[in-house]
Image (cartoon, rainbow, N blue to C red; front, side, top):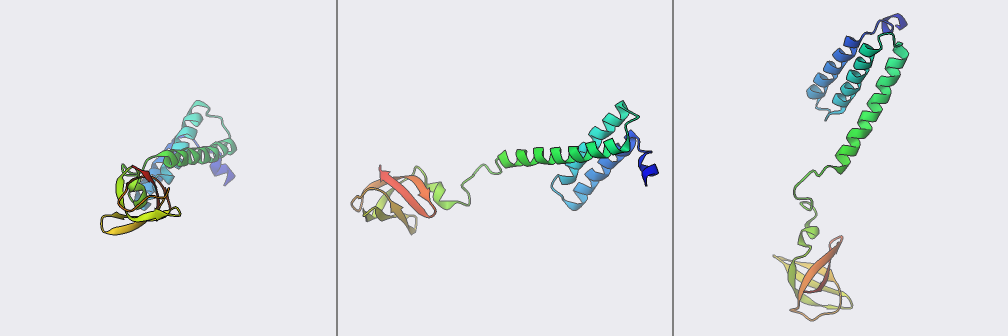
Length: 148
């Protein structure tokens, strides 16, 4: 095995990158293998520049490159906006800034507003029924309101 690894040349790394790219498409790995392929390309370039690099260093650089590229990809995905409607599945947040009329007066900090065909619990300063209120925050399914 060691003799086989000592015969690695730059094009082996490029071939591995192509195989990893095809594998990613075939199994739908969501770019996992593509990033491993990027690391293989980088090691292939280094092997082309430094043809006498030991196989141990090549594998070490490949594994470090895989980890670094996956951390980079994870960082990109974490900060990527996945939707142009970020409150799509958070219904209460869709009402931020909107004005509604109190259906049930706010007493002791709690009341209700009608939103379409449903009543929502609201919190805020005490106000009589029929007062227009603006949604200023959300706490789970409770809307925080102030006088509009």
